[in-house]
Image (cartoon, rainbow, N blue to C red; front, top):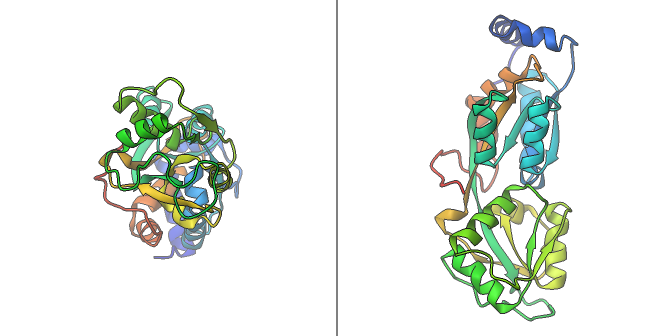
Length: 276
């Protein structure tokens, strides 16, 4: 559903009545709404899908700012971005409880998979040295990867994949001494390419995996564990005061926003995932 100019003005006027202080905090007309989006949402092209749909429906500019969830929530706390869409539930709830963010709402669910060297490429350690293909227990799979001596690659500090991996290590009894860890601060596309080169295992969200063309000899080896599920939530900054922030959250939860999200592959709109 597209918003006519009249309907757009009415929506913005209603927001002014709901939050007059917010309009005074940012009175400049035409200032784009800055939405921090977890890196995986950008890598999977969902961020661009949302940007285009919101602009088409409302005529309002939206600037996605990618980054790890933890960093985006810090920026949200300081009022440097207006909205954050992240998958770090403990940090999100902490901000909301402290009154530093508000309006937390479910956006979409997805899941992680464990990928590794198993698709016929030449890697230093051969194909699937940890022998985890088909394992249904993700925590046990990480323990077997550690025991094999094969490297496990972490993505950027503070991202959802890191939090999920940490939770799985803990569920398996902790990370064994001597585990070979690698870290990449690049985007997931570059990280997948690097993992393929060195024969490393890693946790990657399914939408990014499906969208990537740089995964080389890697293959999905472990999937389906309920603990691999993840949920994305949107929160509004309590400090930025952008007059369109509430409108964006309303749009995101409404028919037009849900339609845009539903068209994105490998995301689910049911709020039934088990978040790590």
